[in-house]
Image (cartoon, rainbow, N blue to C red; front, side, top):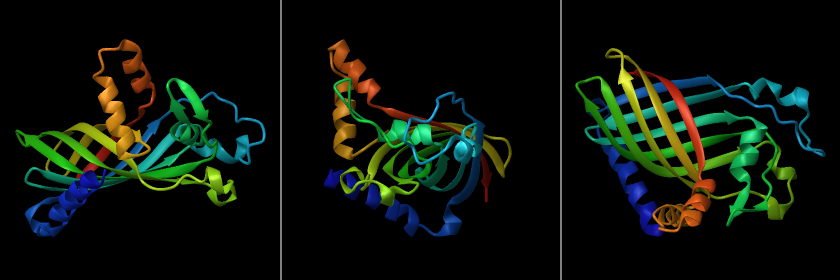
Length: 216
């Protein structure tokens, strides 16, 4: 895991060390509907009325910087309670080890990788990075239940540049609690055992996004 962190940090520093005029800076926003019909569990501190403003829509912002083939990005999203619960639920061998936390929050993705632009209009990118999750009133959770540290994520996306200053991107980010867990799950996906592959798929927290991007 340390080698992976060093690799990610090195790529990020390389991108940041490039002159800002040598690359392309981009800003983006995300706003798209999500479907949720679940009732909050008994005993939750968040009432139905308090969290309905993020039940139907997902909000986010994006900052990216591309230089030749290198690409670095920061994405942040406001999350409704049911997504936080899904992300923080711990599953091992198809069994729930710990139920997730039903509270709103937001997640940050810090990623570096490669981006390819074809014909000045088609964009594709692949990134590796870390994620952090903030949970509302997390300080009131028992100390042993406090989520902490950095998770790992893989991010793939494609987009279309409408013109020199505007574009639309589609991306999918797979979240993992750690780099070690990510490597274990990816290894299980290549297993010849079908049940092992299915169990690995169930442990992937997939986060799809749609972004409107401004190129500066």
